[in-house]
Length: 425
Image: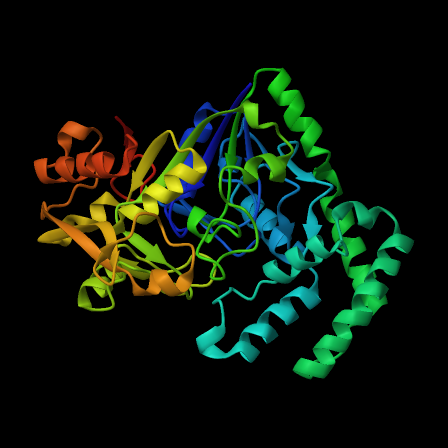
């Protein structure tokens, strides 16, 4: 049995898509285990850029099978757009894309509720969601009233479930948000048409993965977002609605924990965060703007600019521990090449006292003062470097310092967005 889990070890946007795409060359199956179309994985092959939101990054390799697991919430419109985009770019999905019949669906009322709640909360209290309906869909899942793909098999069951849901959702939307009620029959027709179009891809993915495990196949499991946005282990309430941590791979795919033999944590050479929430090392100045510009730090899904800051070791050590990370894949090292001085946060203090553990509450995390260690910049373009020895001494020292401070070895280093500019140590 061989499963490698790829996790984002920060607040997302670490470059997981590129790493998964690279490692897919040695994989038989790539499986997505949580999240929805609220996060994008950008992959660059030569001059062609692919932006994927639901379909695993391994789909660009013709011999790799790709799974969208039961832990994912699926927006039919987003999925169909993605399928059409890939087919128009010459990617053949036939017999290679497998979608769990247990996956929950995002309904139009989920998006309406998501957007309306954020507007009602106001800028001070909102979470900063993408408004794609992810959270409300997971709420229905936990409340045991969600619509799953398997429900599309029976028109009567689907209509009954929708009537029950809409009785509540329409009342909320009308009373609180002055929205028009939704029509049950129109929704039934819309989702049955979707079922017809995706029928070739639907399967029992849990059994498919167990068959692959029995046959000794190599499986890559990928999540969306990052570990510090995990519903249970992230900076709650400024988190996503599922579990992008490595444990989410088991529940989101139906695979046993003992099948996981390796966890790779993808870490950006600095820190970024999208949306609201605490961000101890944030650079809300010209330096932060420089990192944003040099790193092209704008969301693949929404285009929102990302908040930028120095690498945060206390947050990273916590994430590496929660995920059981064996090795780090360090991305965007090249972005730091414009800086004279680079800093790393090595610890926190509150009211002059050292903080021993990563704070669980937002109020404390908002108050921490960062303890920094400075490093000389290398002031050069390292894109195209294909080995550790090709990096400037200052860049090598920076990587080695991350290993020492984080306590986990750096196995992969990425030096540009290009697929080939990534090497193993």
